[in-house]
Amino acid sequence: MPPIPTPSPRARRRRRAEIVGAVASVLLLVSCSANPAPAPPAPDAADVIAEGLDAPWSIAFHDGVALVSERDSARVLELDADGGLREVAVIDGVAPRGEGGLLGLAVHDGQLFTYFTAADENRVERRDIEGEAGALSLGEPTTVTDGIPAAGNHNGGRIAFGPDGMLYITAGDAGDRDSAQDVDALSGKILRLTPEGDVPEDNPFEDSPVYSYGHRNPQGIGWDADGTMYAAEFGQDTWDELNVIEPGGNFGWPEVEGIAGDDDFIDPVQQWAPEVASPSGLAVTASEILIAALRGERLRVVPLDDLSTSAERLTGELGRLRDVVVTPDGDVWVLTNNTDGRGSPREGDDRIVRVD
Image (tube, rainbow, N blue to C red; front, side, top):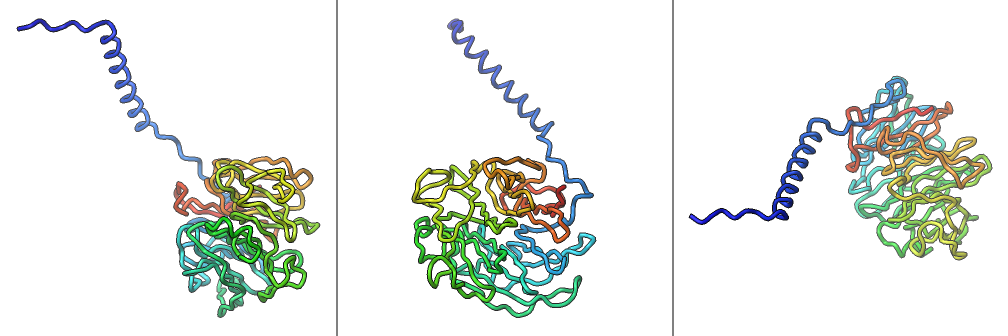
């Protein structure tokens, strides 16, 4: 029997390293299994306004009653004083897919306006709100505007009435980047219409609902007491934006993203990397702009007296934040969005939570 060869010192050192590495890997697996990363704590029950929502998207108020949209179920829910949720209606014609579905809500003169993704377009409808709190219902739909390009993503979807009484609509580029620079297209725009769906005579482009263009996927919009309009926008890979909206303004997409210093385009007043932002909802108080972040899982606070700075609240505490609103009583509510297919839902998600 031939003698067993003696390993060289180099081979022995390599073998010891392999054994040590294998043992370390086993210990790491055991450690991770025995001590998984702790989940973020649940919000204080005293601050939870409602829970058990399914991919909620928007909050609007009718005579002090909160109405909430659910993207995939196409339901409109009313919230009672005890946090109970009641189905008001299921919006016909909604065709949920990807980021599309029943999205923005707005209330004006006793009517509920809904923005939603249909089979081959995004559309805004209005319905009379009927009945009393606790027994609300919706009347028959009237189309306000349709033909807004739709896709599995970049649908925009936020609607709000400005201080001028006009309806503002955010429309994403629906994946057609170049359309954002085409003022004859509805995608990649902020649109402005009368509540009946007509084009206001003072819109910046004649006979066109286009109010501003060069947007990728704007969602949060709001106004301060002086009537200045702000919009939060999802960027591509580099910068998300906070913009001050000017009528007829070109905000650059897809030619530029973020602050470019190009005189042909309007720069954002502030920008953030998508991993700490992905801004969806926006609300304006007497002194601050509040921006709800999805991927960034935080509420960003921008002082109106210095739009170049911001602070962060709730970072990682509630998960993805879809919307932020100021209630008729002056409270601030945030709407979580952990059940939208991209979050990590915990028991009770999704929620409406009051923020100090």
